[in-house]
Length: 112
Image (tube, rainbow, N blue to C red; front, side, top):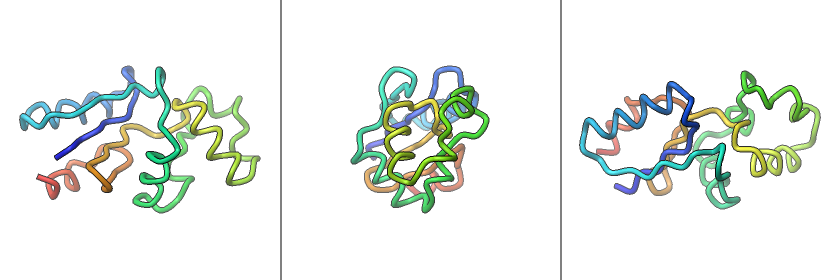
């Protein structure tokens, strides 16, 4: 398994995801979206699995209101997510081409 966890250090669900993999002795790479955003390829891979761009947008984020992300076309939403990782719901967990958005231990169990 090649697990990547994209999240925020202050996010409770991100911490729970990290704990989930630590408890099972599964190595993972943590990427803090406040420090480093996803690449376009990573974002496209996640979008292929989650289905909708709107599922990735965190409407509870402090950055949500000031970003006006709801009022821009699809391509501009992609660019905003690539520029500001704090607009994304977290955690985003990737295992190769598979990915989940949010805390999804039932799906992660199938990866083991």
